[in-house]
Structure formats: structure tokens, C-alpha cells
Image 1 (cartoon, rainbow, N blue to C red):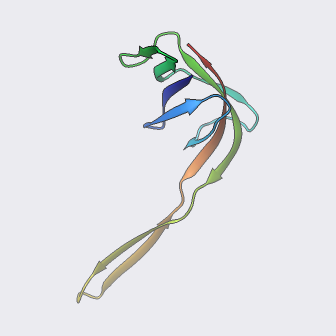
Image 2: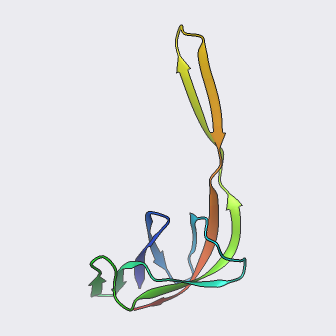
Length: 103
């Protein structure tokens, strides 16, 4: 059984007991959250597709940790114009462990 959820403007395919990195959520470490934005639920040959979300479906997840991802380097350069600019970025994330998929 798996589900497709929407979190932080992205879609993720999740199964039970899976760990997942999503955009930063306002939840404490160890807290259980309920994700209501379920786009699709598949249980064997039974497929439920939402328009846009599946009614009554939810995914329960536990917040394991918060952190920051790897540094991304942004470099802008114009040749022969004496212009060179470097910038870095580290995106915040929340690590979730999927507990249950409720269809």
C-alpha cells in the first residue's frame, strides 16, 4: 500500500515505515502530524485518485528531526566585464517517518 501526498508544493510517494524529507513544517520533534492532502491511495488493485484530493484519506507521520540540506552554490559571472558574484543556500527540511496510511 502506498499513497501520494502533497507537502511544500511537492508531491511525494510514501509507504509505511518510510523516512521522508519535506519542506520545513511547524511541528515539534517527536510530534505526530496528520497530512490531509492525499492525492492518490493504492492498495493492491484498488486505486483511489482524488480530484484534487481523496476524501477522507490521511497519512499519519512522526517528526523525527529538523535540519538543513547540503549547500547549493550560486555563481554569476560575466566574462570580460569584471563581474563575479557567488552566493550559497541551505534549505531547511523536516524529516518524517510515515506511521500509517488511512484510506
